[in-house]
Length: 589
Image (cartoon, rainbow, N blue to C red; front, top):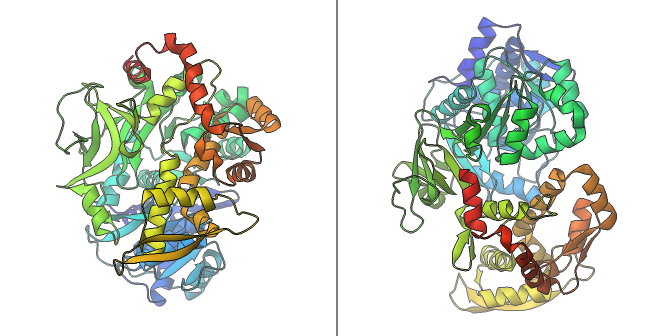
């Protein structure tokens, strides 16, 4: 087993003058990176940080973050990466959950009770202190990092990884991609997320050079970084590539054609995009990987070598076991093909050891040594895995189950549809959010009918001009007796935050993937909202505020769904086998 600290020490000794990281006009060699991390580690020890202490770090795409990450691991601490611009409530929740001792950050202030250490000031103090860290003995089972699982706004989970987990995780990406010492990797990813973190670690394992970039917002910055630092590798998410292609236009082949490989993670490239890129960049290796905060990269697809399997998300690496479990009783499924669909379960040294401080969630996820996911998949005879969606996102259509992916694939075939996204968030999810909020905030159990009434009377997703209140009766979870409380529209705003954020994320994603000329038309003509969910107070104002595009609710918003279903029958000749079967048949072909 080799640790990240071992890797850093080795490269600092064997290639001390090689550049480890670039960021704009900042560069650090391996020797400089090791020295600064060791000094910061020594300073943290002088502040009382010891083995097992949790340290939150702002996941900024800057050398300071990398120095902080390495320093905490040098002293045996547990890193807790957080968003670059976290909401105070989220930051407080993570601090409360992890009991973090300090917060290394680009920020100058933090919520009350959180001891903040600004990166710049703290690193300067460490240099003045001039004492390197005393590195504890290596314990493979010692916790080293808590990675946030971004699936619930109010209940973020920290996936706990040991030194053994991270070592395997690092090696998997290194091996799955075939990283080399000569790699100069452009990394425009958030470094508090699993994808960015595992790629960063793997590049350090290879002894390559990392070029940090704050996101993929502007094609020009990407182009300049590739040319200035002679990048030959890139890691990005599919939506970012779509944005880059639209901005670069005919320059894309020249710019990305300079790269030895591109790795796509945190989502799968569409089949059409995989084929397009393989033709556009015939000499660039394309990889699509599947992983999670709980596992790191596990399934790897070398697109160029497997154009006959472009609908797959990947193939498990050696040492990673895969099972498909029955949705009904959780028993292992035998057989292959699109008719054998089950929940994906994985086993290997790369998997987390649990969710920090959440034993019940851990017991749900880890069963008999297997990490059981909510992803519904099937596999072919060669062991390649094909993703259909998440079990909790599956939609029941007329007695048959359809995944958002299948719905999107079918909708994309309809004339006039340029881009689409499907998620299982509707009126019922808003009601569930109210029930959960009342239980969490007021220790009050309310039924779905009461939740629906609250949504209708005082529900809102944008601050109303006038505060509304409603008396709500439920059963106290403390006394077990009926209780009457007053709930405000401000509380409903908070209760709806999670489903609303999921919807807005998809709205932004669709806009990002839409061709620029059509986005211009949308900006001029506005967004039209339909369906019962659009009638929640302030939804049109929220969409307008978050996108900068005027949004309106259609007349007869509820009837629009039925009318649209009727009009879809005009394309019935294209859906003779039904949308679900048509989608799966296309995956096979």
